[in-house]
Image (tube, rainbow, N blue to C red):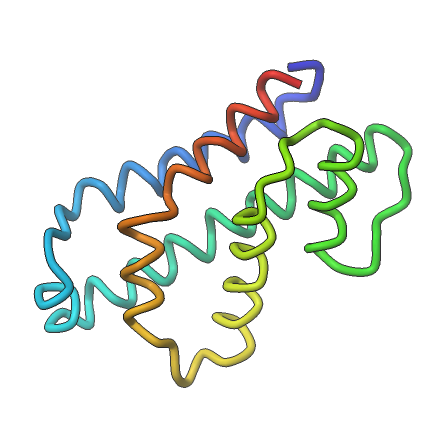
Length: 134
């Protein structure tokens, strides 16, 4: 990776959040549904991981001397257009989910959170790999 240590630190935070989620051993939706502790911890861990993705994208654009776009999702698309990261639609879905968490926090659909935990965590790993290989 040609980018600086701050970016690597942020990638490590994403890895840490993925490890935390994995350590909770969430095995079923029923278990997840019964535990507000797991729900809240999962929402927060996902939010932080996504914030790190956003921070990394903004830092890379700054290093490349490219002005930030109008939104975090547009910054992700810009990195995709520059071929720094692969054009994976789930990256933008994650940013939209983060926006939903921070702006509509009074009602987060736990089925969506659970689906991300079970089906989308590998996209964080893909993002990390893309940045480290750029």
